[in-house]
Amino acid sequence: MIRATVVRALLLATAFAAALTPVTCLGVDSNQLPTRATKELPPALLALLRQKKMPKHSPILVRIFKEEAELEVWKQDTSGHFELLKIFPICRWSGDLGPKLHQGDRQAPEGFYTVTPELMNPNSNYYLAINTGFPNSFDKANNRNGSLLMIHGDCSSMGCYAMTDEQISEIYSLARDSLLGRPSFQVQAYPFRLTPANLARHRTHPQLAFWKMLKIGNDHFETTHLEPKVDVCDRRYVFDAQAAPNSPNPLVFNPTGKCPAFVVNPKIARQALEKQRADEAEYAQLLEDDVPAAPIYSGLDGGMNEVFLARFPVRVPLAQVLPYASYLPQLPPIPWINDDGSLTSKWFGTCFEYCEVTIGW
Image (tube, rainbow, N blue to C red; front, side, top):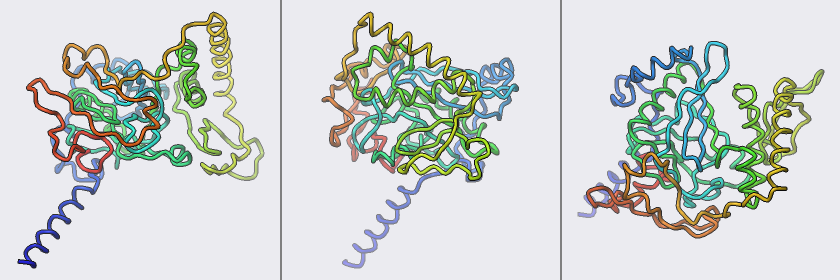
């Protein structure tokens, strides 16, 4: 009897360990992948690639905007520049505006992230999933923690950016094709479009300085349509840094150490500086006009693009959270009600509806 109990315990432990092992996408035989992970792009999207002169396997870059609930996929065209391919409305994101700080705070991450083939999950419980790579070196240097923050399907989020299954199928296929022979692609996640008007509205928010730092990388991309090179030193982001002319040593960045002497690529810096000056003048005028400031905390847990409001009416009354969400201890999961009245979480170890777990992402 005792021996049988021990054997059962070992079998359960083995099964649990297997469930904790991340599933890679591009590192396994494609014949073993589910059909949803190997699907060709739909004809309309292939036609759009041809129209925009974007090779099927050219690099992509993903930009996410919480407040607008939009995910943009940019793709490199034959000129070598990134151009906007398609905007996907986000079905659900959770938390409030502001970066992810702690495991269990419901916050979807903000910042610059690198997605490698190992972060693509074809066997996700949420149809398909792309791990954003949180925490990155900036997050770790600032003692931010959490795990398995995804872009996935199923329109259900507690720390992730959730799309519909149809949307994630396209996004996943675009990412998969771009990673053929390439090590990674970049994800830029923002609280909102970093315009002077939006920054002026959120001027009282405690994360304003962080957002202005993100805006530097945003401006580098928007003015050049080239992927910004991202480094971290002195616990801050540095964009498009290069060694000074005639410098004898290569640049070495330590996320928690002092920044080395560097210069910003002059071609990029010149264009970005022009945009920065124009934006600062507009921002100053908005402050002088005393435009209304947005509440620091929305009081709601996340958001949904308005195009989904009619489609998912039972998910519109979002649960209230206490300010400031990013500083709260771990909160219990919120059960979302499906059309049939059943709890989405099914309350089976409620973690199955929670993004920050190692099972089922």
